[in-house]
Image (cartoon, rainbow, N blue to C red; front, side, top):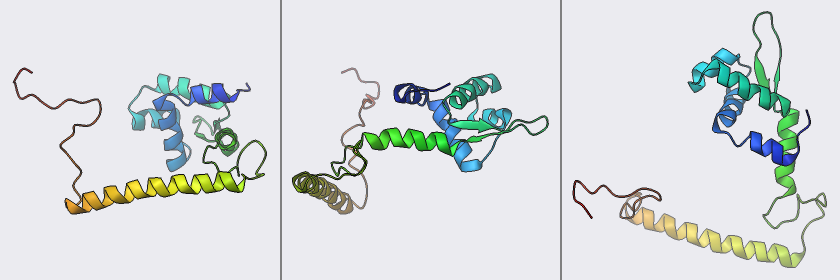
Length: 154
């Protein structure tokens, strides 16, 4: 079954499916039950995820007697990467729909200026961390979390 880019990324939008792809790319071909054990989900759930990944062309299977190992299909991943590269936003113009025609000098200079600004911010943060012995600033709680009130009402 052919999938468009939006279908492909919808399929990849599920954490367990990304986990399956990651596992297969790191460890090579795996059976449904082996994947289920390693991801701590049911074999039935893995089977459903594999069916979708297979229909999208991201994994393939190779029956070997009673076992059916699944592996990453490099052609499907290449296609997926191609969709991402087509919308590259780095400003260099090397990967866009024009097939590598390149950006103008003005666009490249603007991108270089933006990167220098970003690098300045990163280097300043490194200097701050080095001044604290490499410890991050713990005075601000991470986003989405509140400091413990230790039993006191606010």
